[in-house]
Length: 510
Image (cartoon, rainbow, N blue to C red):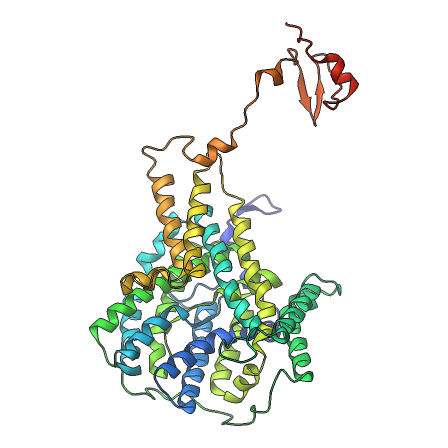
């Protein structure tokens, strides 16, 4: 609660929340475009991969991409603006989840085709919608030791994405990993650092640092022949996503079960993203807010197949953008949602954004994703490590989350359901952190105060000879030694003549 000038109290929830700040139409559009550019590569990657796996023609893949942009925009609007029981009202961008790619490719490869994928998405998302309120109760088991671990892992797991972008994005391209691509990413990174650290001294420039850096980087790339806008004019200007363009959904039990595992992963990741952005915005996030966010996630996922799109989830990279720019307004992200809808309805705009070199995104991504990890570290600084039990939880969980990042094929011989869950570093770390926190901080039976090997290594000990020269009443103040009368006792180096002169002299007893 806060105290008013009249002496009365006012509850915190009645005060204006940071995310409710409205910046005006112009700034909101500019900052919203910054969010769109940050996540554009990720949102179009999934329909591109699935379309190629399904053997679709380029025009049909274009339909999938337009549908992904359109549904991502609608889901973002629901999540940010909020409706009764829907939307966490936080600056979270929604888009097609990458967690579902492997499962959808497997369904397509098994002969089910896109209609079976769409049916599995609709049914599993409907189940996810029903269990969202139950799933949201996990917030009571998410103290800073868990949330900090999850947020840190989100940032770390995104770093390989930034690296691939910086190298050019397409590993099959001849220039993948070239000095030119990495140099362009480095230029963008340098621009971001100069702008975000306010070297120019203008707050608005710092807040738009990512957008401005990408624009300048793209202009430079165009000047040196690394960006091509020649295809922008090819194709329709306006196109509305046609319902059931690829046919009516087919509901296959096996496909639904496999996709349900993906939905559980998405629920875990979205919960982590909601908690992360809540920490960054410095606003209260409770189980009700998480449930509303998860319902928005699952509701939009269930409707997405109607227009030819897939499971929706919060985009972690945009959490980093909120942290870097300090723009906490959810209406800014809502503006980004409007832009996404327009990109879905106006393919020509999508072609302009698609022409931005991936290396430019990589340069910005290093800062964005690193900031997410740094935010997690800041949260972990609040954790009490007095017996290092929490240190073991953090260390094990982050290490567990890094396994699929360091070794992507680590779980390839495990059952498909297991691989689907633990192939995600975020869900791996979240599951481990929650379980270890329950085991050591909730089920305390059998715990000892000095439980880990780390504790034994951090306890201080003093030898008898170290204290033999001290007298009763001696004490330290600001690094200086004083006797009982308050007189300073000189401290000299071990090899000084004074030290040699007193060597071996016993202390007087009192």
